[in-house]
Image: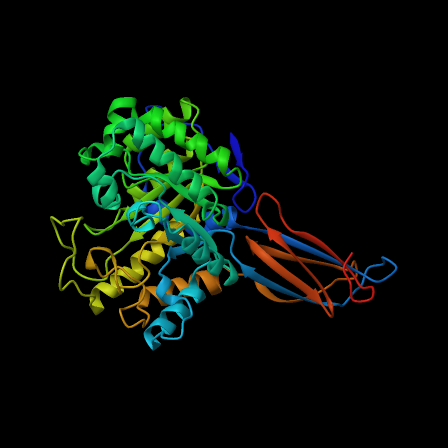
Length: 450
């Protein structure tokens, strides 16, 4: 069957395929890696392209033949994103490295994640930084990017404010503090975002038990608490898409999501992390994760992608920072090859909304890991060049076309996206989707479009 999901740049079509013998919603069956890779480009054409039609008439409504029509794919609807770093915003004391990072960031990405961790957002009790985070989101929008947020609530110890951990409130008071945080964010930053990770990493929430948020869930139940705050977030922010985000890529995540959905939690998007510090995911692993999520009839956004361009390190301390972990030419080549394959695979799946690189640069990267598309000085790695070619050249449709005697132009296999169309001084624009192909009529009258 088909599930239509409104709200993310239009309708997203999720294909729910019939399941064969021995295949369940949690275990979609084995994937044939060679076949998946061989069919990737064909799937992309089916999933991301459709004919785009333009009709040009004269002032009397008669077909205008032999008119040159300029077609420009302005931006993708699929999210090609990255984590936001405020150092790239224009400022008087910015460095050449800052400017280089900004230029590359704005060239490649169309969405970005604004960090909302409670500990950094409200360092001093009663002094939240909602206005500053809203400023970040508005800056991104002025540059043509869509802002998203991460996260509203997370029970990891070191992401909670020190004052909160020191006070160690009882569950009733903890709920009051969570209510106040949500109210403040709903009046400042959340209205500026398209979507937000409301809860983060709850499959294995018991990793952190010695803090007031974890104790609240022990006392009142994880599903009950999460469902309540998802509903409250929806009530206060009806225009924002709500995401449940986790690093777990096994059926355990889908079991939790199903429990929440059955409890009435308004989950719009599944946020799937894909940090690969311990080595890259296989094609099979990636595809089966996508297929499991699709069976929940919710689209998936890959929210946190990390792929090394340096050596793998085992037994990492994920709460600390590694020293001397550097990028190198051979691993940069491997990173580029893998990222192209990974992006093609995600782009080819109809249930995937996008992919967000967690650290687009090695400068200040989480764990000190060499996972960026840029080196610390802002120079591009081969992976940046690969993705730039895919996003800005291969997966864009643009050019000049001439109308036939009927006054029509059909652009076959036009990639999904926002388009600007003009002929002479007449211009129109619109979103083109596989489920809703763009059909424009341009009328040549006083330089206006009817």
